[in-house]
Image (cartoon, rainbow, N blue to C red; front, side, top):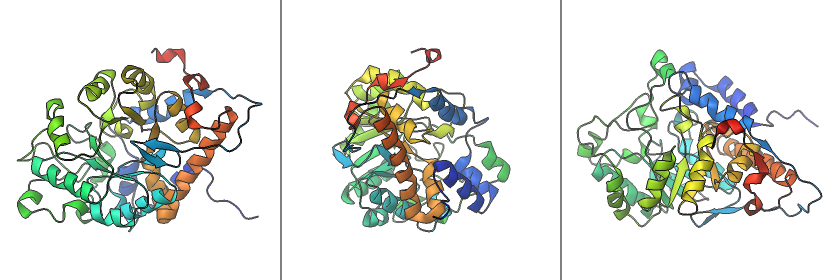
Length: 368
């Protein structure tokens, strides 16, 4: 029996770092805002949670599947929207969509994708969401309607980038992305719109709120966004109970409890710390998902116990993509699924609907 090169996401991370062409390219994915306190907190707070194993239970025929806004996925881990994928693999988002489909789960395509909305839909076999950065009303209308026509299942509006993030590693390397690998969905825009859509060479976000023509989104304009399509609306970047309740009040269908992997602003709580208070406040008025810091199947299990319906992974998609394209993304997801299955069985559950808050221990220092 030969040596196994990859048994965990950390193996994929190490190999990806070794294979990345330049330090700047690696830091573009790995870096976070300012001192990266929030990035580290996202992972360390998961490590403070412990699980409660239960035995002599019938755990045969375990079912990991769930539904996300009515769409069935095989297990509750999805692939987050993250720009710059073509700089790490020629097939970029197309490979990621194929890998997610092979693993039986959902992929959210970023606004700043290297391939267009339609090019990704052509190869996807699993559900797709379109992640939206709003920069201009007419551009948003075009992109949302194209997503609907191409078969995407929801619009995922990212709200936690009121201005570009401060990733100091990118500044030190003077990192400049290859614009030809980031604007796939903008290639067919009229020239007058391409000239005002904005550009940011140091961020995944493909817009600049200071550009001429920007029309900001506020809570009272969500009705306008919803009027553009009958697709469900998910809001990504929710960090407080107050904003979660506003999402419910304004008729949002789902929220992603997320701090953008610590990439936008530093010194915030981790996503997992804010999850339970948000879930307790909104109840079943909206579906709740989580991202930022998920590195093990036990993290997925803990997030479901504390109120998430599913989780997204961001940086790990690049690790899988760098390792072996679509097959690498599938491998990354399969590792998480296997680890999640072990947590499920060790805690005496056969179905994810059985997971309860009592399955994990939350430190008293979290002060709910």
